[in-house]
Length: 193
Image (tube, rainbow, N blue to C red):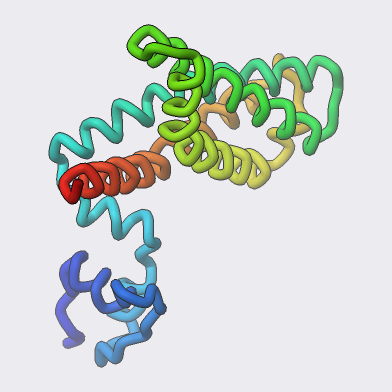
């Protein structure tokens, strides 16, 4: 008959050693069950075990804010580079620089109103957004490179627009757990002080 489908949490526990991060290949008595477990990526596993609590809501809000700045920079960078007929790498470099610029700018603008100095606002902005924007940009650019000709078409092409929408959407989904993890570290650090 085959073995029963393991729970998603059990699959996570069976594949990943929480302490060392080593990948395991457990004996399950059934090749289909093993394939079922191995098909889970670390991001999927985190989503499965991630509760929809206040921390997750904060992570979603922070990621949405980050996505806004990154999307402005990405779209502007890709549009400028496409209009200038730049090649793939140049497009990605310009879009990434502008994504960081606008991502930081939006956060800095909000934080500056609440802080005493430019320096303090800058430190907070760099501390809160660097990992988030980096995660978003790495995933976004990776997906863009996977889409055939997405980085070589002009702005009049539908592929240009749906490629950006898809890559930014995937980047959002991947960055939510990253931001939640960052927020949970901050919450733990504040509890211990």
